[in-house]
Image 1: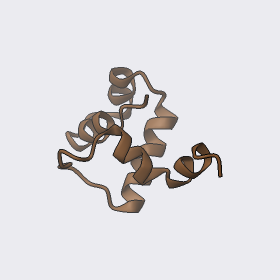
Image 2: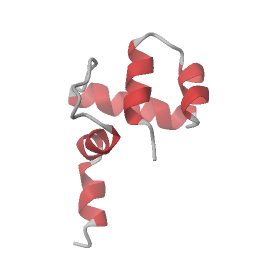
Image 3: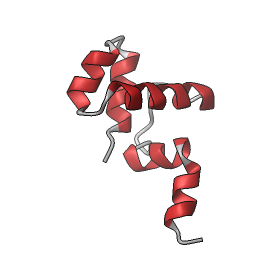
Length: 71
């Protein structure tokens, strides 16, 4: 699973895309996509306790939940 929370928190700390990518094991294009979506949707740090990776994924990619539901 993608570590959405870690990506957002590391970017908030000012770490480079290369560092975030290497630390999370996800490519720079994916990290950039996640950060861009978060910015567009107004998702900013600090994140609350309920905002885990699953919550963030559903927030950033609501159509994935619909596709996975079978409808």
